[in-house]
Length: 413
Image (cartoon, rainbow, N blue to C red; front, side, top):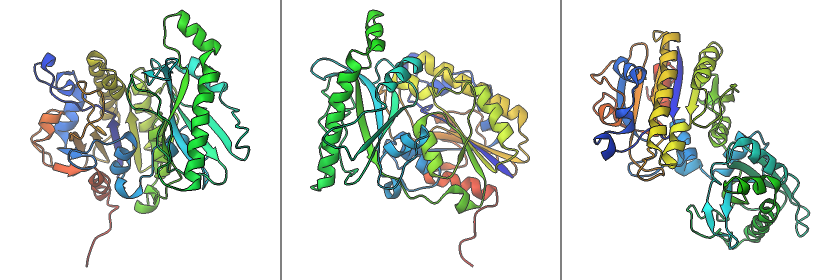
């Protein structure tokens, strides 16, 4: 037996008056998602705990069966691993955003208009060899991932992850001065380095030719780096070791790919996978089918609906749900549910009205051999809440799948 675990990032939502008090999942045309629900058992999931909004990283840690409150240090390390950087013991890693600021370093747009990959990569080249004269012993490593996103590693002696973010997490707020979160010399040093890098990045990027061209076209310049999620290398027992399986992931979004790598999944590259609403979902589905020949568990992550939610774009979110539906339709045509389990869920609710993650439960459907079907016929927040799984926790998902695969050990005599 094998399993395919699919996450539609940010796919869940709240009822929307414009849609007749339906959610985007209820309004979208999604025959394949509904078929999966009808073939299986359904429920809703508190990804971390009721009312706790999950981050993308903590959500996936929970979905993979880890306790986020116990193992989580910060998102930076996952971003770094996800873009292909090596993270060594003692390194401090950060998630970075290209952002737009005014002359007073007030944030106009935290994502610089979701700058495209090509121009962002050109800007990233100008940041690859940064050095600070005051800290010659510290190596500064930066790499761009997708759109506005990137990762930074500080490597050297005397560093600490105990520093706050420079990202204010909202527009119309000033870039934060990074401060130490404890009284250690290491935290003070790390904060000082980041504050110098903040101003250096602004100086390098402000008059970069890419940004001059963007301004001439009426586009927002990506003229500063914001830092957040300071973290070191976590110690996680791998999925492969815990369940004695071979696991692979199809995830282009760096932070999710990084969580997968930390958990022991082998990353699979897919041409046409972008981590945006333009991603080729059918190519991802095709790669998943091929990978099932060699792996026991495939994790398949689809990002675009979350992007649309953060941007408040209802039409785009519905279109992205329908693209996910096309992929699931392909999978149902190609995969034998007498031999393979398919689990589908969102990693968190991202309501269009909020434009951020919330702590609402998300729908889940699991279909496959010997699954006792319930009476649910449609995949949505409202319908799945009536299903046989009931209301479960995110950390219950992996044990549930592994139980179906016969990989769980009996507890007790």
